[in-house]
Length: 199
Length: 263
Image 1: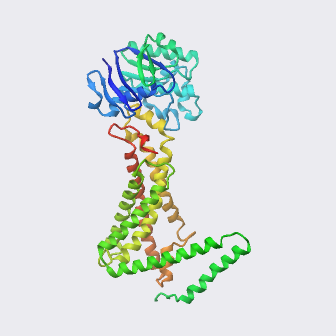
Image 2: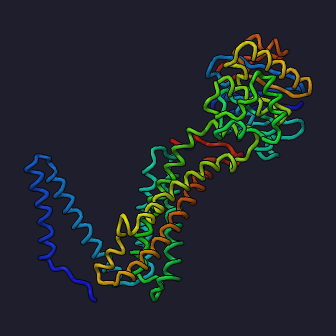
Image 3: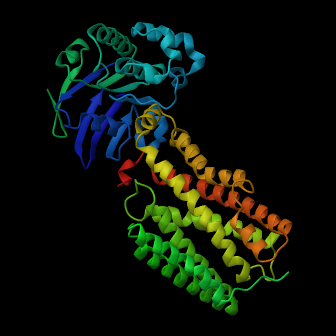
């Protein structure tokens, strides 16, 4: 299994058990504050937690945290930025690849040279997803990847995610749209007060 | 030239200026005369007390006692560094960061100056060691508290950006580097200002004091230049120590950003 989670827990949520096959998708719905984001952050090892997480046959503890996160990549619902200009957050030497990907997300190529402060929430959200996709991690943890987006963009992003799944990428995503799980062929789960249940 | 020693009468004449201030306060009804009297009395008592303490310690001329006094000064400075920032660590971390960086910067610069430039016999002679440690501490305290305040003030605001980089597999060291740089920069600003203004906007205190004590102005200037270099070294060391210690205390063995360690 690309991603296996065993008895993952923190003082605030869990314990969680989950298996995600290659190219598979699992979608978690649930009320705000039920622990969905917390669960993804725990898998990515961004918050203190106990229990096991495996990437294929490699246990998380056996590899340095940055290496784990590079392969099991979390994309938060609120996108984060650390420089002024968009392109400074991306590998500048892969510009043509970035522009091609951006176009598929309905983003204009000029955005790459714009100040981050001028982008809309939806543009920032798509660019932060693009940033993660460029590294082609085998497992993606997506926190409301289409939350602030219009219908066309949602369709574009879902098409790309399905493509990645066909290529073997496993996706665990949090969504508020109950139909998104069905559209992505995902196994539906529900988070209730820090506990994960198959829906 | 020998220093002109002050008599009690000289000081009493100067003290009449405090009465002038108090009279003004009463006349203009600004009700500051009480505070003014208390502050003036405090100042006199504190300074006379430290005068006796210094005279006593100079007479003892015991390295252990000198070291003790400097350590007490470092701890008081560390408390100030810890208390300044609006955001703090839980527990005693703020104080420990302050004590380690202020102590480290002060000892390194003071010992360097005492063993290479000023060279009293012996090098730990309290006449030189204590005033020097005091001057360095005052500056180091300033830059350490500015660095700490800058770091703790910006880390929460920058959290989404730092965590986005961590999530992409960037090391904590790299993700936190911009904050470390900014904190060090903030800590170095005051000494840069002091050096640029010295001699034009301000006549630095040590130089003024030595000229009043009868030293040739050029000799006094040499001392002041040496001191400015020492102070900039001390500021740099303490800003660096504070920034790296703070960055280190905000992470763990899994390279997470541990803002839960802040209040």
